[in-house]
Structure formats: C-alpha cells, structure tokens
Length: 264
Ligand SMILES: NC(=O)c1ccc[n+]([C@@H]2O[C@H](COP(=O)([O-])OP(=O)(O)OC[C@H]3O[C@@H](n4cnc5c(N)ncnc54)[C@H](OP(=O)(O)O)[C@@H]3O)[C@@H](O)[C@H]2O)c1
Image (cartoon, rainbow, N blue to C red; front, side, top):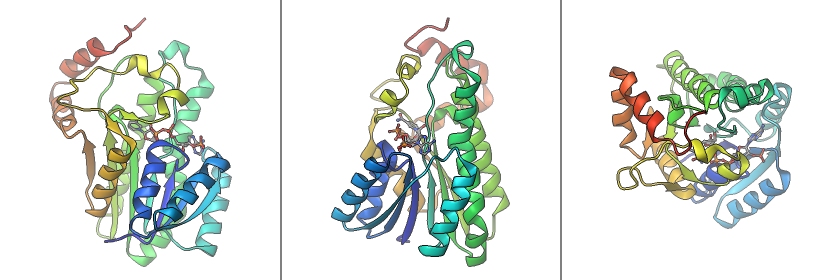
C-alpha cells in the first residue's frame, strides 16, 4: 500500500519531520501539524522538494477545540487521511516532586489526549470507508519503568493503553492500528526537554545502537506500510518487554541501576 494522504503530528521537528520527508518520497500528500508555523513551512518546502505535496496546520494539540476545528477543515477541504500518525509529544523527565501539576497535565494532553481527539475526529470517516491506518509513536516508557520520569512514563502507558484498546475495538473493520516503540533517537527532543537525558537508562550500544531521526522514521514507515501491530526499534527491546512481563522486579531493578543520574 502506498498511502496517498498522510497526517503527521509533531511534524515541525525530529521524528515527525523525518517521517514527512520519508512519505514525500512516495509522492504522498502530507498534512503537517505542530505549533511552530515557521518550522512547518520549512518542512513543507522540503516535502515538495522530495516529490510530495504538503499542507501545514499550525495548531496546539493540547487544545481539543482546535483539533475539532482543524480536523473538520481537513475533512471538508482536503479529505480523510489514509494514515494518521500521532507522533507529537513532549515532556521533561523529572522526579515526581520536581514535576508540577501543570507539566504532568501537559504530558497527558500531548501525546495521549491529542491522539484520542484526532482519532475520534477521523475514525467515523475511516470506518465508513472501511480503511485507514492509525499509528502512535511512543517510547519504552509504555512498557517498562525507570526512576525520575514519573509523569512521562504514566502518559506513555496511557498512550499504549489507548492504542491497544483501539486496535481491539476496530478489529474486522479494515482499520489498522500500529504502535511504534523507539529507543533513544538523536533529535531536538533532548534540547526541547532539558534535563531528561540525565535520567536515560544506559544501554549497550552494540545491542541497542542509538537511532537518528531518519532511521526512526524508516522503521515507522515500514511498520505502517506492512500493517504491523507493533514496531520496536531497536528490536532487542522486545526481549526486555517480554522479561518485564514475567519478572518486572528484575527489569525495574536493572533499569534503576542503569540510569546516568542517581535517583534523589
Ligand atoms: N527522541 C527520542 O529519543 C524518542 C524516543 C522514543 C519516542 N519519542 C517520541 O517521539 C515523538 C517525537 O519526538 P522527537 O524526538 O521528534 O521530539 P521533538 O524533536 O521535540 O519533536 C516533538 C514534536 O512534537 C510537537 N509538539 C509538542 N507539543 C505539541 C503541542 N502541544 N501541539 C502541537 N505539537 C506539539 C513539536 O512541535 P511544536 O513545538 O512546533 O509544536 C515537535 O514537532 C514524541 O512523542 C517523543 O516522545 C522520542
């Protein structure tokens, strides 16, 4: 399947930007959503240079009404996406007592509620058409836990719960639901969310080499196009998730020991 209309959230930077350029090479029309209009315009230009077409929408995805209005505009003026990729996300990794209520809420609003609201806007059309792919981009924090990223990890568990429950709900309707789980990716995420890197669990670089944005985008693209339930990159993380399902004490202890900055 080569997607024709692809909506990507968080397309102004990092993985979303790389995904937009990857889909552009298939000739797709890419809908780019994020807040930074200037960055979106630059990504739209790059998409056109790569052989695709693009429409940018500057939107705060924490705003449910803005999602409703923008989705209605897209449905009316452009069409219903063949692929919807919920990628936008942010959140500083901090100890619980250093995380404000506002920051914790923001991490739930984007990515989880943004994915919920966007999916809710387009799903009726996809169901009527009998086709469509909905993908969510997340981190190992959807499966395992480590110290000092409490609000981030809780939000990522919410995103996984949303994705898994959606897949179960739409079974047999022609809708495909993909969860993409990525290890550390070299993107501006780490500058956008200062302090987070210090709490990153250390991994063996030979077993789990760090990714760049293009590699992350390629993994998501391949997973979506081959209709996978889950994409896990680096794949070795599947072993960690399996072990965590049977021996969470073991994995939690190991990850606690492996973070760069000791818990307070
Ligand atoms: N980098 C990693 O190591 C890594 C690993 C696993 C998973 N992930 C996940 O992958 C996704 C993309 O991350 P990235 O590494 O590409 O980070 P990034 O470079 O910081 O990009 C984040 C994107 O999300 C958008 N965004 C954030 N809050 C938004 C809001 N309220 N409304 C609209 N757009 C918003 C940003 O756009 P604006 O600022 O322009 O709004 C930006 O385009 C995130 O969900 C991240 O958690 C990242």
